Image (cartoon, rainbow, N blue to C red; front, side, top):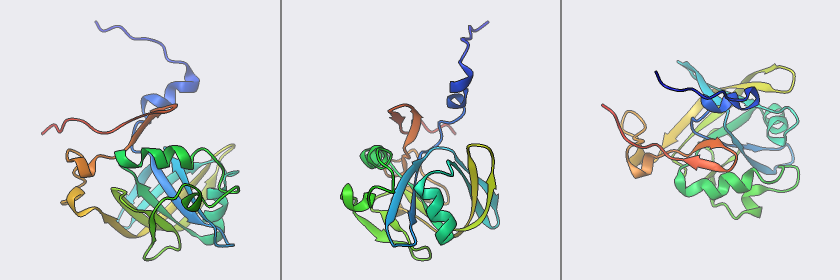
Length: 183
């Protein structure tokens, strides 16, 4: 029988939270752009596509989404690990992270926010609903536009190709990209 090791409950979420880390792009009412790494996210609907984000209601990104009623889910790849670390290093109240970290970007088609160039994919979302829990807010957005790098998408994300490898957060300062394709 395999041997199991106990995991502290305050770290147990790391056993199931190794999906792609996302960069959430938003805009404040004053026009300042923000970019925040979010690791707790998932799809919650297909038709229409809906996305759920879990975040602190104290963060600038949350305030931006509530004020502007929109956000862009950006899916970074290996080449964007520096941006993920930098974007998570300061609050959006302190700076426009795109300008501070010199992140090249382009505007969304439907949502007033910026998209970092070279991300694997992005989903532009209109805010639908927020569910407040104690220390966390669950934000649900409805996708109004989505796109992926042409080389990274053919009916599905091609995570087995270098262009489709998404960045995954394992905890702390540890990241990985997907490995082998199993058919």
